[in-house]
Each structure stands twice: as C-alpha cells, then as structure tokens.
Image (cartoon, rainbow, N blue to C red):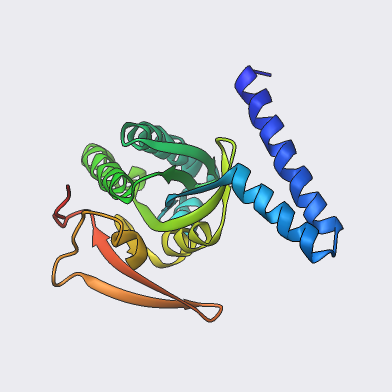
Length: 216
C-alpha cells in the first residue's frame, strides 16, 4: 500500500468514526457538536463536476461489455489530465462516470469544454462504434470533501442528476447558482431549464460543445 493510500484510508476512517458517533447519539447538543466537527474538518466550497458517457446501455448491448470497457478506459485517459490541467481534483471514476472537484466554477466549465473538444477531435479519426461522448453536470456549493477521492453534499447530488440523467452527449449543464459564481456568460438564446427532483427545483443552463462561451 502506498503512503498516499494510507493517508486516504486514515482520512476515511476519521470521517466514518465521526459519522458513527453522530449516528449513535440522540442528544441534540452532541449531534450539533459532531456536525460542526465534521464540517470544520471536511467542509469545502467549490464546483462539483460529474460526467457520464452517453449511449452506455445501447453500445454495451450491441458490441459487448469488453468493447465498452475499452471506451471507458480511453475516456478516463482524456478526462483526468484535462481536469488536472484546469486546477481540478480528480476524485474517482466509477464505471462510466467521473467525479471531480474544482475550487472555481470557471475551471470546471473550461475543463468540460476541453474534454468534449478533445473527444470530438479523436472521434474524427475513429470508427463510429468507437466514438465517445460525455454529458457533464456542474454545480457549486458546500460539500464534505473526504480525502482526495470522495465528496458528499447537495451540489454532488445536483451535478449527478444533471450529468447522469438530464444532459445528453457533448452537453454541459450548469446550475444557475454555479454560473453566478463564474465569469462565463450564457448566450441570450441559451436554454435555461428547470428540473424538479423530490420537490427540489434545479435551475440550470445548457451549454453544448459547439457553442462559444465568453470566459475570463
């Protein structure tokens, strides 16, 4: 086991111990103190980035899971360095999803555009069945960042909903609250959408790879 893995394991153990302590008591004062300890130790504010490969089910059914695992491998090789180059923290990849945290929304949006642009360029040299498209969801807010490989919080749930359920290939969906923290400006004709999840409204803007956005 590497030193970094040991460090990550130690952080996760600390997090789990705090959650276990919170779960074990019904005393409201103790719960409040533990909540504060959790947020003091693990709380961060920033942009959550979650990507999903489009056409996962149809492609894997037609060409087999090994073919799709090959595409997942290629997608991860594209996503990771671009996230890092844009000052993001690549947390983990799970199946065809990638999870990253950025301190600044601008960096998250720029990374999503660069990733889909890189994939588009690669697709031009490949057979149709080897084309890769990502859908990305981005939100902003307070999260619990546990080590360097996991995070929890409302912005994580929202970015997941946008990236996995609502965005289609080569699209980036950005919440209005994330966009408000960014120098990117949506075009006048940009699609502003509202989704409702468990009685919670998500206001977001749809960006496509092809459109030009005004950044910093």
